[in-house]
Image 1 (tube, rainbow, N blue to C red):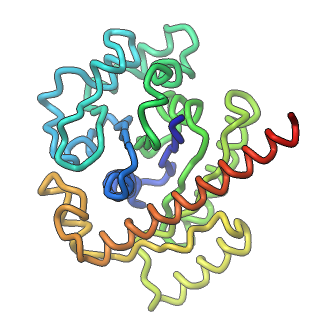
Image 2 (image 1 turned 60 degrees about the vertical axis):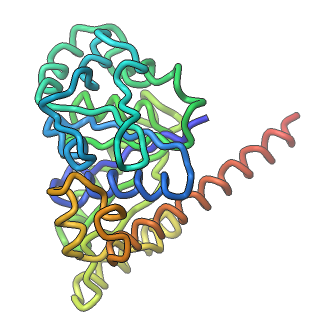
Image 3 (image 1 turned 45 degrees about the vertical axis):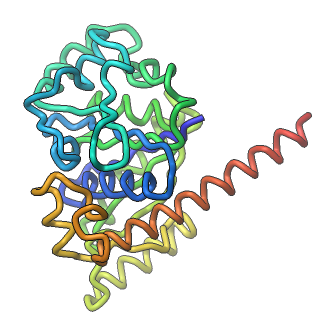
Length: 268
């Protein structure tokens, strides 16, 4: 059964798409079966995977609006090691159309049901806003990874996002949890970075990933080549950081699965 994880933050420019693309590639490099879903009308995760968003025969838009099944929307021939459901500007129309459809908050969850056993991880990239697309992602997911920079305004933003996640948990998806907080564009030389990082660990404890993503030129360059950093320059600090993050995520997943299995045995 796939572990579905939404990567989101209502604040833009914090590394959501970079994290989604590079974590997907890193998980695939460890021989995990990975599907990445681009749920942002900008289609940056699609382009960053080497797929021309303007040439999509079938995108997440068709999937959400019942014009295609999930098998038709999945691209398996990417050069990044993971499968992809792409997005482009058509997705903007989906926000309006979804308002008229039944179970509008659960369209993505329902669409993914047939392929849950085919993947170990499904990662969802989101727009930098809380709209019906993001609600669909949160309703379909078990966990949320929140990428954030260690700066003052990020602390305010994460408080609002945690509130949103709690509301989704209470009203739409009781299984939803914060999988982890990821510190991105990390510069340990800055005192503010260290201060904010300490506040995060104090508040969120072990939900803050030990892995930090540094500022790295190779990470910034890779999308223009349509590649994750791992394929662009596997020895770069950015690529190695996302490999470490993948390892940390896998270990957490295994612990959670073991705990769930133990609880089930006790119940039986």
